[in-house]
Length: 157
Image (cartoon, rainbow, N blue to C red; front, side, top):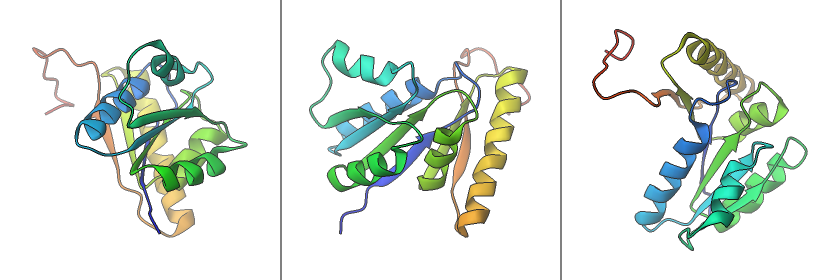
């Protein structure tokens, strides 16, 4: 049976670059020939708006989800795509927790600001808790987003 890679972009902080990260990844995977499905679990629906606003590759599909239908959307998308990317709302809620719990990997975008880093660390703790509860490893990483090229802080180094 086909099993897609499921990657969530998660951070309890809004405005840290989750949707941008998902759209860049979707474009890169599509350019490499993968079938990509984006699950937009942010009530603002920015990925849905992106998909309907212009020309997107035909190999990228987008649907909406929330905590109630997250599992069903992931299962359905996993049967039809090679890569499933989940964009969650910037709040600590059930949809974020479920996205992390079902993900094969979690990317935690954060701008180089104390609130983004603080909420990013909280998200790391959530990933570790979900991994422990499910008795499996969930790889994760912090992704510095929106960093000026000329700035290299101590945190980046």
